[in-house]
Length: 393
Image (cartoon, rainbow, N blue to C red; front, top):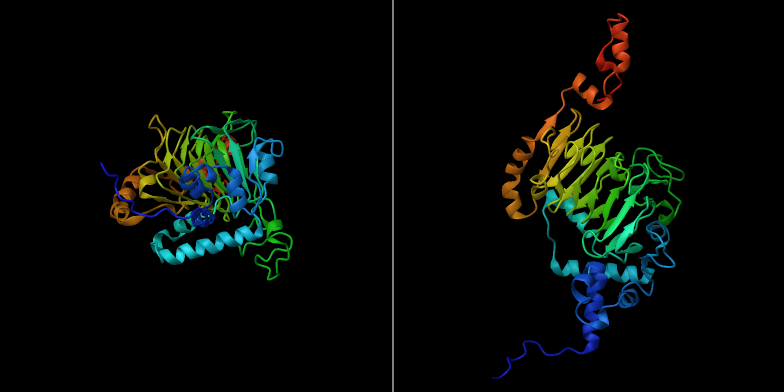
């Protein structure tokens, strides 16, 4: 029996390698891991990626002699060489030009978040965390790419005490939104030119975290992660505890994440904060509401995520809780099939949303029982009002 004819001729090795380098520069670690790493032994080692894609700059591997802890990796990891970063940007631009323009206006922000991941391991300092459990309270103070190097659930960061496992500190001069004031040498709202270099102004707001499980050993700590500034991306993160989002300059993105086991709400957003959830995130089996939006907090979820948001397991709490000042949860679709189901997903989520009434109900939720009010009533003071507790909504 004759062998079937070859569809394509064998390519010279230098051309194959040139194609591999071009693709990995454009797609970063994601492209290398999903395609080229398994092609042959020549492309399988980290050293190949570091040499050809990162300009010879090594990745931060935890644990190692140079990076014994996750926090050490976050603090000391190095970005690729300037020449490698420029080459990656040029390759991405070439690929995007070849593909042409695409996307839907309603999902522009989601597309932007995905483009952030195009050159993972190149544009940002990269930290590869090996399999294992790390008893640390990690604080993100600079923009890095934090990747769990293993199967789902193999890499665990377990916070101790009263701190979350992962905190975006928001420390630095760019922690406030434009037009809301700023720190030293800030150009936000004061008309002055910011003279600090970008590295000095970076506070971790562009960080990307992938394939890590976050939990708190102290079950009294409600949150496994806290974000107080920036637009970080969480992808394939398992939260064994809640996520807290707060602040007008805060808009994280959750993609393919699961939030379970929180003592209170699964994801709480407050103080004018916002978050996006897409790619079928799961919010379930938490102590109270799945999503909690208060004090002008808002959220955007795609159709697949909207259908996967649940309240408490005992049925005592709805999927969503919002205060009267909150814009609520906006549901969007990606692709033609999703767009057909947007209205059904909105109706499904709305039927499982509790909107607090203005006045006493909102005040009691935000501040608890007004002990001083009961004391005044017991003293015969008749003009006390529960609406005067100090809530500004």
